[in-house]
Image (cartoon, rainbow, N blue to C red; front, side, top):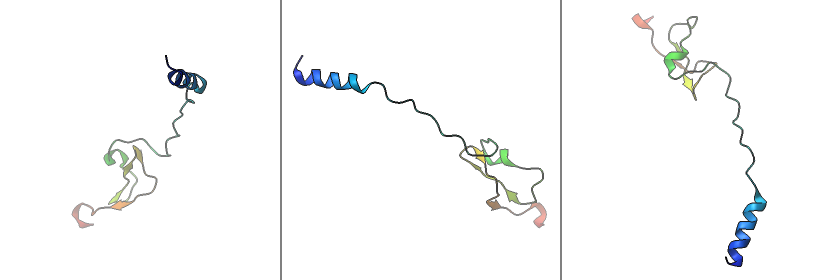
Length: 70
């Protein structure tokens, strides 16, 4: 084994294991897969709560026409 290979192996041994990785906390809100999962029964007609990053948004960002044009 050459000196260079020995030094590389030694440096890896000194480095040890990488620190433990922790995931950040999920954003607040109800979990969802699609926007349909975010439908609220008390929401006014036409208001849509979107599913963003697998969480329902707290404030509606979109609207759509209500059935019958009202």
